[in-house]
Every structure is written in C-alpha cells, then in structure tokens.
Length: 390
Picture 1 (spheres, rainbow, N blue to C red):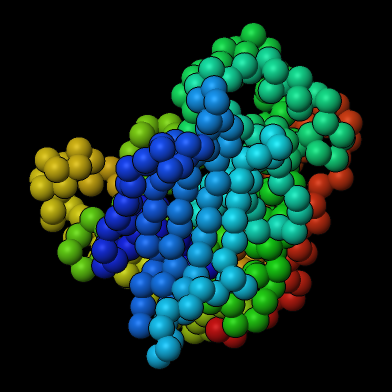
Picture 2 (cartoon, rainbow, N blue to C red):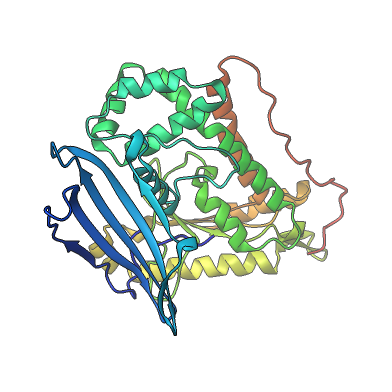
C-alpha cells in the first residue's frame, strides 16, 4: 500500500497560493472575509476553492462560513463552468460541513483509519479538552462501539499534548483500568496479525517482502526481548538490514534478517559418511551474509560510535528462516546455533510461538482468571529416522 506524503504538497509541485480579497462592505454588507486558491490549472480544466465568512449586516456578528469548490472547463469557445463537478459546503444550521471535510481529509491522509471494514468515529479534542467528559462519552457508547471510540480518543490524544497529559494523569489514578482497556484494543489486531502470519507461513512461494510487511506493522511479534524498532536500517555504505531493534535488557541494538519458510524444506543435509548433519545452501548463504555485515560494522566501529553513539561490538544478529523439522533437524539447528558467535537462527514456527505467547498474555489480561484455549501449534514433522532432503 502506498503511503501518502505527510506534507501538504509534493516537493515537485508549486506551493499553494492563497488569494486574499479585500471586501467593500458597501456593496457586500454580509461578507466579512474572502479567500481563494487554485487547486489545479491544466490545459483543459481549472479547479478553485473559495472560502467566505458571512456576518449579520445589522449586528456584525458571525453568521456562517461557506466553501465552494468549482470546476471550469477550458473549451475552444471559452471557459465554461462545470456545475456537475462543483460543490458547496457551509456551516449553516449548526452542521459544520467544512470542518467534517477537513477532519475526513486529515484522518484518511495520515493513515489513522485501519484497513478493516468497519465504521470509525472521529472525536474532536482541543487544548482544553476535558478527559472526564471523553471518558463519559466512551462509557455511554454501545458495547460494540466502545473499543473503537476509545481508540479514536487515544489516537486524537497523540496530537493533543494537553489531552494526552490529562489521560496520563487519569491513568495514574486507575492504572488497572487503562491497562485492561489497552489490552482489549490490541487484542483483535494481534489475533488478526497472528492469523495473517500463520497463513503466510503456510503459503507456498511466499516472498520475503510479504513477511517484512507483516512484521513491520507488528514488531511485537519478536517478543518483549526488544523494546524498540529503529527507523534506521542502513549502517554501512552498501548494506541494508530488514529490521534493526533495540534489546530491552541492555539497550544494545540487534539486526534481524527475514528470509522465507523455504516451503518447509529442511535446513540441514545429512552426511551419511560421517553420520552428521550440516547446514544446507540457503542457511549457509544467509549466515555468511550476516557474518559479512557484522564484520563491516566492526570495521566502521569508531565512525558509527562517534556519529550514532552505538557500539557495534555489542551488535548481534538474528535470522528467521525455514520451518521446524523432525527431532533430528531441530537438534541439528540447536547444535548449529550453539557454535555461532553473535548470530541466532530461529524458524518461522519459533517466531509464531513467540507471537502466540504475547497474544496469550493479552488474552489473559482481558479475560482475567477465565481459562482461554491457546491457539493450535502446528505438529512437528514425524521423526521417522530418515534425513529430509534439502
């Protein structure tokens, strides 16, 4: 999905020019303010926005505002208004159509509305917003709408420091209530994310970028071992990592390289002459790739430490690749990882178990002492004693 730019215009576009028109109150006693802007001016069409503020000619008090979006067709016979592609909005009769349009554009352009099919309520929140009133509004909502309403309140609070501080103060007085509310809001999204990952893991031919998309949206799947997903993914000139995370325990960073489940193909080959397992081509390749990258980081340690304040000697790496095999394959993986330095290898099944554990914690937080049936764990391949071909 393409993410729209955060700024109001693309760097390649000319800036928006707003025309301010002086008002002759003798000829227009009701007009208080007129502003206009050209939104588009091509060879065939011109689109303009005109905003006016109207007052009472007798008292001078504010009456209403109006916004007109007009389209003009440029024909050989001359410019012709196109009423079918023009629209007028107003604030008359207590229905602020203009503000609703502004809120709609603001919300959808920032990506605040989830992709799931549902209805979402946008709540106004200003600098003096009363957190208690918002809490009462949530309390009065229907059971089906409470979670979404609360989510919208919290989303609005992110951009309103006064409201955010008020909610934090309220949360400090009743931390358990807010902890359960946060868990409830996350639960449905977490369940869906786990289901999506399970489906993708089981999909033949799934690509690396598909796994990266899910995990970028849901870094919690890596577990509480990590406290932060860093935006920076490139630390040396030519190499970029899939994920860079910060460890919870010591604050050092760790690199995570995401491959694919390899459609269930075994990670290790069997050497009959020595009765032992050795890493297959895909596993050897990715480990070699990560080892090279760690060496590049070590070689550039002093520059990175000076500019980024990160000690690359402490940087570790994790590789997610393949699926669980039979008992001998799993033992070969444990033995292989035990001899690696600064690199850990886990399978996608192991990653799913981490994600399910986090999900289970949330389910217990919401349900309290009620028993919850855990998500099914895929059964391991049968241990028939025969090596699995790579």
